[in-house]
Length: 157
Image (cartoon, rainbow, N blue to C red; front, side, top):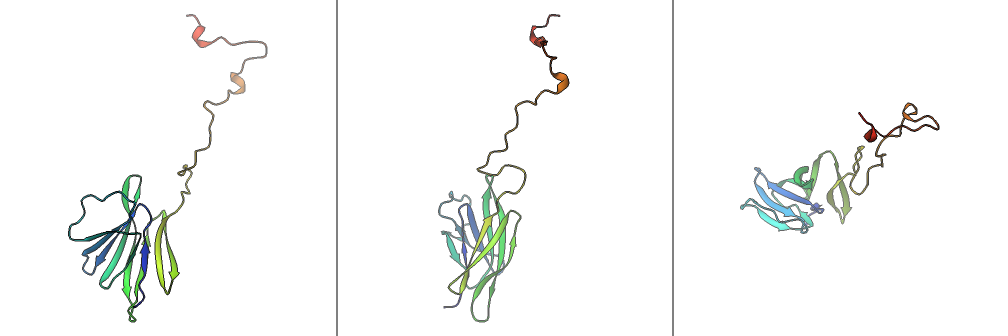
C-alpha cells in the first residue's frame, strides 16, 4: 500500500473533503462535537478523530467552532505522487491557528491547533488584572489635618 497522509481532528473541529471538480465527498466530524444540522445529503458523513485522504480527493478544508460560530481555519491541497503517495500540501492557515505535521511510519499526521491568545485581553482560564474600584483621592481632595469635610448628603440647602 502506498503512503497516505492523515489528518487528526481536535475537539470542536470538522473537515470537509472535496474531490476534483469541487464536489463535497466527505464530512468528517470529531465524535465529541454536537450533532451537525442541515448537512448536505450527497456527501458521506463520518464521526472520526482521524481521516486518511483517498484516491481522487483534491482538497481538505478544516473548520473550528469559536465563540459559538463555525469558521474556516485551514485548507490543504492533496497531491498524488508518481509513487502513489497521497500527500497533504500547500496548507493555508488562518490567523490564530497553526499547522503541525508529525511523521509517523513513513507518512505524516497533520493537525490544526489554536494558538494561545497573545493580545492584551484576558485569555480563557485567566482573570484580568485587578483594578481598584475607585481611584485614590489626589492630595488636593484630601482634608487638612484635624479638619473634616461635611458629607454631601448631609448638606442643607
